[in-house]
Image (cartoon, rainbow, N blue to C red; front, side):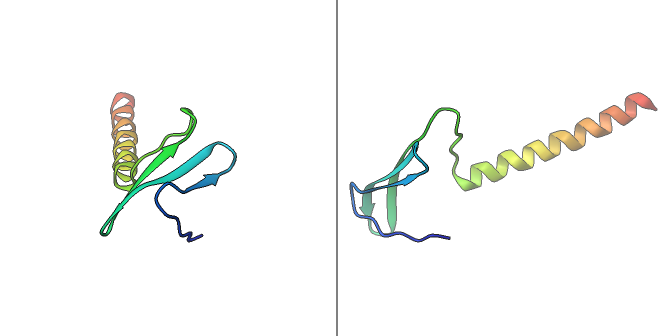
Length: 71
């Protein structure tokens, strides 16, 4: 993992088309802005995990339903 120090208003670039900007620092909370192409999904990690879990459940359910149709 790369760890960088940034101040309010400073940015980092990921590749040539994703920019992360520090918008505000208040106590232990940091507000960031992310500029990325619409084709790049951006999620909070906990939401991303929920999406993955829901997708796994849907696939598992689909497999059970498919088996029921065969039998």
